[in-house]
Length: 101
Image (cartoon, rainbow, N blue to C red; front, side, top):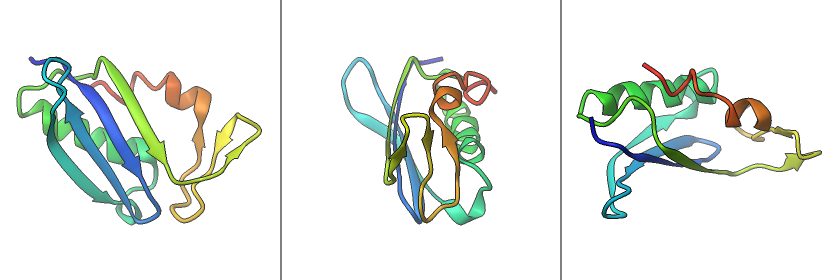
């Protein structure tokens, strides 16, 4: 299995995920998911990881960078205004179970 880094752009309508290859800095296997199809970010992320694991990438990324279109409240909770998803920063940081198959 090949190591990889997760890059994501989470907007009000779509969540976009891609694999960043740590050896050549290129993006691979990008996917776009309608946020209305998933009750939470972790559900969309799990779907992405399941799909790319089948393509030969490792079951977990070595690193991740997520861009979220939303305000930050008290440096604890991120609440995207359109998606309705609630993301607790501490939980997202420690969400190793989500990134396992």
